[in-house]
Image 1 (tube, helix red, strand yellow):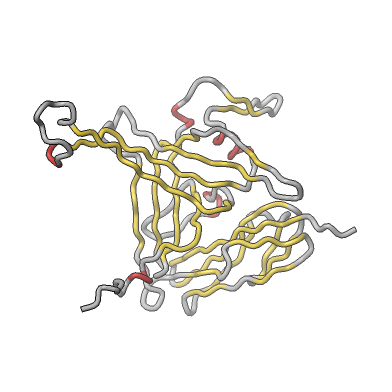
Image 2: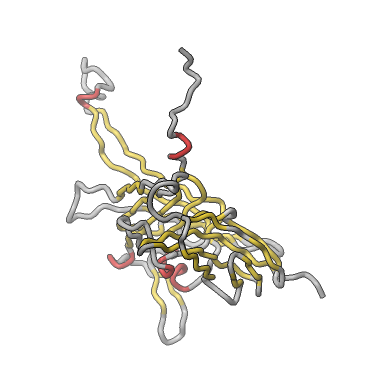
Length: 272
């Protein structure tokens, strides 16, 4: 017998692409509304769930150390880290952790006290290679690393995002994270759609082609989150002006739908 083998379903269970941050996600249908997308990202997304353990017998004389009967979980750290490209009012308020907009002056001002409304429920959702998804729901998330933006000459600004999940005094035994797996087989069930590109960078005035693979017989609708940056028609992206946006392709068949996205960065045209 040889042991240099892998499970037959390995390539059906791969998590692929960078995934996206959402304000809400429907685990029953595996879909979300466009307005629930938070930001375009770069460099992928890191989700961490790390328990902290304590050995109750560690400081007791003659007690065996590191036994499973005396091991206890004392806490669990839950976090999401990524780099955002968008800069808008909603993201800035959230990134500052505790901040308000002054309706008179329009200024966004950090404050020194936390409110319960500063904590939010967020989702990270990524594709599986079989057409399904993995979704992570983080409850009571708060920006814990403040606001930081890094810019470069003729480059796009990168905004660091670190979100930490929190428990609640009303549910002290509940860890603020849930996982969902949406199974899918593009050959036999459900509606799926995949794009051949997950991110493109183009100069203003130029075009770029992306293609979609989707369930046979499905209707595909293409949209741009910001047509002032880029437009799209049947997979042809036309760069309008410098900025970032997200191109989505939604496949619909028999009342079911699936969405795939591509992050688009438009750079200023250097001509003239």
